[in-house]
Length: 89
Image (cartoon, rainbow, N blue to C red; front, side, top):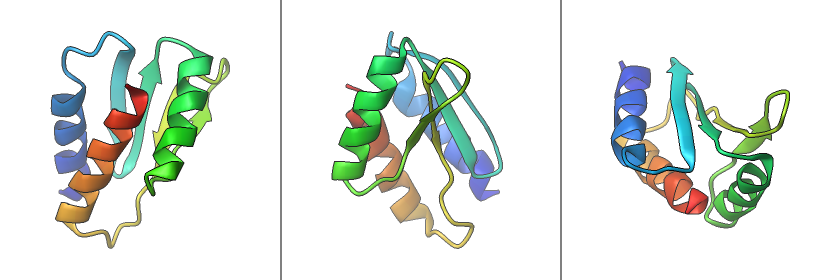
């Protein structure tokens, strides 16, 4: 249930952002495919500065992945997702 909420919320936050190519996830394993590895690396650093751990991954390092704990409260998850999208720019 929380994973479905997170994926829906993340898709809402990312709508209309050209730098974000795809939003995907299963449970609380969430990923954003960006338009390039440099943007993913920069977003990873910005997210960490905002208190959100996000790692660039994938064959070409342009996927930004997060895996919040299963016990996270919905409000905190929404806050973290917002900071993540802001970090992408």
